[in-house]
Amino acid sequence: MPEQTTSPASSPPPRTETTPISGTAAISGAAGAGPAADREHSAKPDAAVVRDALGVGVAVGLSGFAFGVTAAGSGFSVLQTCLLSLLVFTGASQFALVGALAAGGNPFTAAAGAFFLGTRNAFYGLRLSQLLALPRPVRPLAAHWVIDETTAVALAQPTRRAARIGFTVTGVTLYLLWNLTTLAGALGAEALGDTRAWGLDAAGPAVVLALLAPMLRTATERATAALAIVLALAALPLLPAGVPVLVAALAAPAVLWLKGRDGTRQRAGDPHAAGPHTTAAPGKEEDR
Amino acid sequence: MSIWIAIAATALGCYLLKLAGLLVPADTLERPVVQRLAALVPVALLAALTAQQTFADGSTLVLDARAAGVAAAAIALVLRAPFLVVVAAAVAVTAGVRALGG
View 1 (tube, chains in turn brown, purple):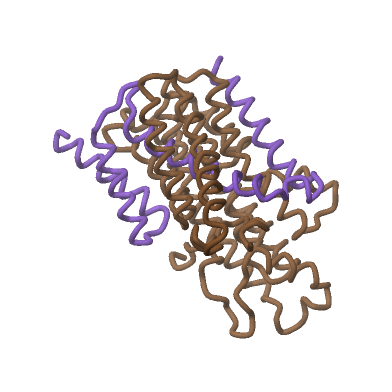
View 2 (cartoon, chains in turn cyan, brown):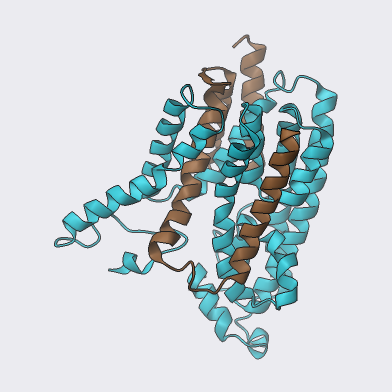
């Protein structure tokens, strides 16, 4: 189903009577919606939720092939490659770990980069725990599926029931496909021999770039990305492998600090001088 | 051996991060500065990773066929191509440039 490859968050609402759902609206809407509300006309049919979830799960799940090829091409065994997808199951961290070790980094700096990339999942979990209201015994299991795609699908749903279905179907589909295609990619890379000759060493940076692209919505985010690239490339010849990427993470607090100073100077004037802010997690200060 | 240590540390760390979000009280991470840092740190890390995996050969900077492939991926992203097309474009262009002796 090629038309389903876009995130449901960016596609138009399926029914005219439903209002566009933003993250916070989905949370407050779900909080007010009891089981009875699910039968109202505003409820999204379960089949539509499953269709959205399958679309995201299939499209992203297939890219596990790129991870399998990249990891196997970087010297990881098939077993190690598959264990990463089974146990880590958050794509950006997996690519970061493989890239750092392939570049000769020590295991702890490599794991640190993967860990810092995984911190965003903690914030997804925070929003999902309110939205899904999972029973405590289920949380350790559900936690493994708290990633970009399941969060995007769950937050785009109008009711708690739809959010739970969306989260679960996306999680199951993605977990199965991501791991099967990782195995296929790892075996394929061994069969191909020199993956560089096939251009497969470009798959890693292309996937990471594709993960980054939707995050570059505001000037703040673009400035952070630009500064991070400069820091990483400048540090690369000077510091041990794996460390330059961690140094580049300092671009985030640096840009926030510069923006904060700018905001203090301009506070007397236009409060929105820094531009409209549409990050996924707007803070209270943004409204002032 | 070091690969196994890295795999174990990453698997444990990434799982605990996911679990923490579901278990901690909601107001713990609600401070605006924490939220905005959490949104920006992945941007910095992913940008740095893209640059490193495109231009690094060990600890030296090189300009080879990968750069052409990643440029093709960037163009595909601007054109809003699906995820798999973006990756396929990068792989195909890199392989093509190498085949031509780039």
